[in-house]
Each structure stands twice: as C-alpha cells, then as structure tokens.
Length: 148
Image (tube, rainbow, N blue to C red):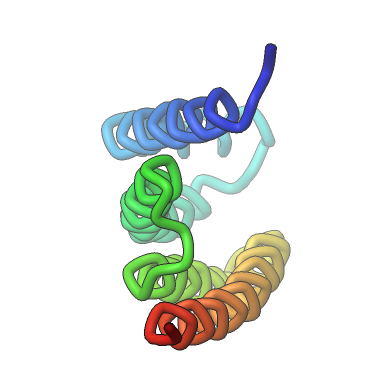
C-alpha cells in the first residue's frame, strides 16, 4: 500500500534526480543553448544571452535543491516544525527570488524570460508565506513543549 513514508522517499528521489539533471545542464549548457538557437531559428546573438542566464540559474537551482533535500530529509525523520526547516524554506524562497530578478534582467534582450521571472517570483512568494506559517508553528510547538 502507498503510504506517507513512500511519498517522502519518492520526493527525495525526485529531488535528487532533479539535482542530477541540473548538474548535467552545467556540463551540457553550451550544447543546449546552441541546440535551442538552431532549432528555434533564433539569431546567433541569442546564444551568449542564454548561456549567461543558464549558468547562474542552474547554480541557484542546485542551491535550492540542496536546501529542499535537507528539508525533505528532516521531514522524513519526523522533524517537521523546527527552526532548521524554517531556515531551509527561507533559503529556498531567496533562491527563487534571485532567479526571478536574474531572469527579469534578461528580459530586455530576450522577452520570454519574463515567464520564468514571474513563475520564480510567484513560487518564492508562496514559499515565504509557507515559511511564515512554519515559523508560527515552531513558536507554538516550543511554547507547548514548555507547558507542563
């Protein structure tokens, strides 16, 4: 039967697969950007712009996935409402905001980056709200732990 434990393990596995995929993007970045330019009949001047956006976004994505992995491992161990998880969520949201700002800067030479910027900003905002909920839950939990 499918249960909570399997779901947690699946989340960890998917997160680590995504880490591997992003690591491959670091290695294959130039080829991916050349392929995109060639397949889309884009101007060759787009290549350095795409490459300039790809590497910082991939590095921020790897940082985000690192903190997500830590959060998922804590949850898997039963440590849910902790200040460490709140800190992980805060860091993940800052990674999203950084990608949003970076992509917003790249919308001048290539307008489709606006979609990535908006999506990353939206996810960052949702994570900030969830982080605030976690912080309140941590405070309530700590207060209850001191109650006899």
